[in-house]
Image (cartoon, rainbow, N blue to C red; front, side, top):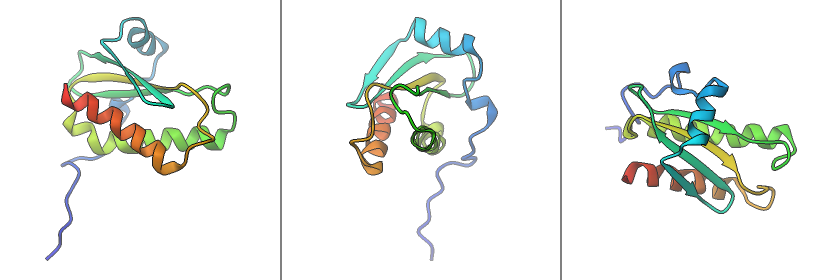
Length: 123
């Protein structure tokens, strides 16, 4: 007998779950309901009018100079969002990097992302 647990009935990261336009990002940055902090990451959270949560990332070259590192952060955020999206309400979430991540490992980065999503779930 298998002990596999599905994350959700449809654990995909669809285009409807992304913040795509500058206007959508601006709405979240201009009037966030919550700002969630970790040592290296920060998330702006705002309720949206859509039927599902959406995520966006504003990761700058200044804080994360290499494309490899930026893409790693984005992949980890997308993956954690994909797994937890069915537990979240209809929120727009934008992640930013507060300070350079070169001094933390992949596991710690994943923990910080999970902590932010757990705080969003609790409220």
